[in-house]
Image (cartoon, rainbow, N blue to C red):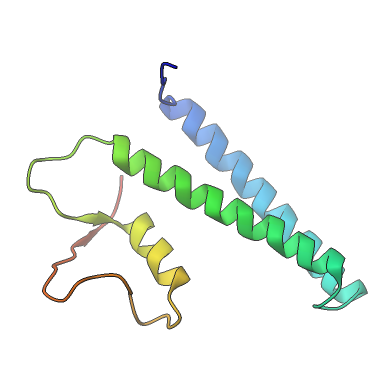
Length: 110
């Protein structure tokens, strides 16, 4: 099957829609926590949906990075990828999975 990358306009629209959905999911989780409790199955399912949405966003960011043109020898990691790794880390001050001696340059994506 032939792969057709998203246009800039399509990606902007997707990002906006996903932001709206994420905000709505935050509101839903808040309401369910207030009405029930953190261990109620409805609250847990809403949190799972919110987590799935975040994983989907990270997957799209990784895909966009993989498809972006890179200069030979450019070993910089985009800020979005560093945020994803740090968010999964047990400590917010640590980035796991980086071998000793590796150099990471954090540059803004534009």
